[in-house]
Length: 339
Image 1: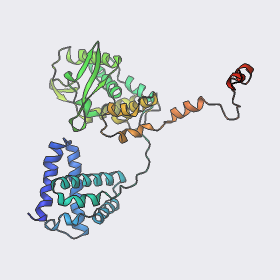
Image 2 (image 1 turned 45 degrees about the horizontal axis):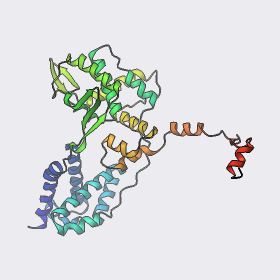
Image 3 (image 1 turned 120 degrees about the vertical axis):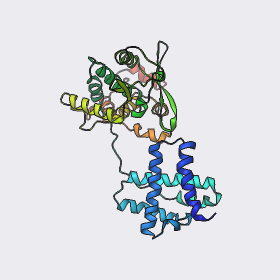
Image 4 (image 1 turned 180 degrees about the horizontal axis):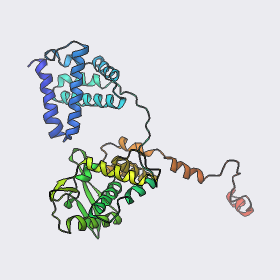
């Protein structure tokens, strides 16, 4: 077998077998990896004047990949996008090295290509005041309001991703007297158990009564929309619309609510809240369903509120420090070992 079919045969195996069946990657991830490889092919065609028939692993060198990343930058790609493309190529070449030991040298060479430097970004989350206002916005007067309140409360309480919430079925929710929680299925089809508060469980029961009349089946989706008296899965666009609606509704009374509100801000706010009260990052990692704790480390920096609370506990500038032994001669003698 020549180099040419080997390259494209491995591309096919990577995208159609390894990623979906071995890695259990999501369609979104597979699409991103496919785009990265397609862009590399376009770069080789445009910059190296290679036809598709001429492209082989010999063209994939450290110099080539470095040039490819510069080409992406010249086209206006952000550092985060460039790093995503590089990660996809490294993953592809790692797969290739596992399939053909002769390609290990190429894979190791590409490992030395550095990621693009990214500017430090401020974590995008909602303040406690904004969260409270948003969760209280829908109200409890109609079945839709009861549903929306429960959805927002559950998203915050579990710090779940939107699709994890939308995929929930009745069987995934446990509200027995001894146990309260939900089973969330996240990236890579991995399921994790996340406990919920008694308040959230109460909202769930209210939602079941209002939207299902108490008549549920294990496979029923917890959240749905109705058209022509038929239930349909709720989409992420539906959730985005509801968030915008309630954000616009409450912003005049709560200036902390930003102009652009999205579901991940609730996830960030909950994770930051857990860190603020001293929950270890390792626990937060499992709570959020992160594969690597380095992803969770973004929550380990103190926010302005934490800094303010710390400063409030220290002496103001210009105030002399006081010590409990200053006016206690007996304590001085004991601390000095003289008594």
